[in-house]
Length: 248
Image (cartoon, rainbow, N blue to C red):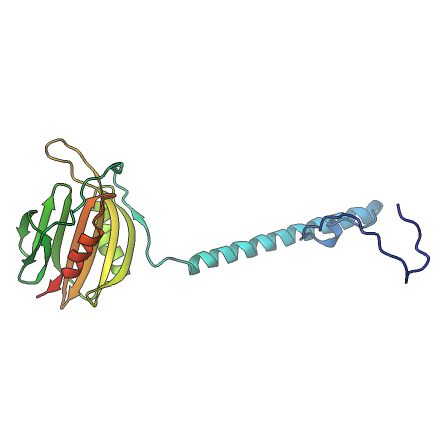
């Protein structure tokens, strides 16, 4: 309790411990501090205050929703994650995944009439016209040549190759589609996961990580796809293969 202050010039203010009030977004009549009204005036006052509070809350909610929606639209990513709707479930990744291409692996050049690239020596090769596949256990690479009307874009790859892959692939999960430069040439890259084909002997499947590169020249689109068990370390070897691709 404090006494009366007789001299305002010499008086000191009494400081009490009060927490800073939280911001209050309600109308003043609902914030407290007013004397109660009696009878009809009080009921009218409260009714108008309730209406004002509801109107203010609705306006505030609408503003927040509109700002959130516009922020989401403006922050749309350059690429979109896509997942296959197929019934086949994704296989669990191996704890100790096989598939590392050894650092001592020897590479030899493979050349077709349209392109050439470095390939691991000793891998089983299958040629089908201008397309080719090299496989070693669960590792592999393939090149497919098709006609194209123009230079591919992230959006064209997403609408065509990515959507087709989700329909025909095994538990496909597309993680990224972006544009890169390899050997001074623009290339579209698509990174995704999928299940392998069942092993013909033991019927085993593994979860694969895949990277597809799309090269374009003069109406032709070459798709180079590399795959290995998820978690295998083939960064350097895949970099060498993808950068060795050349048109002929």
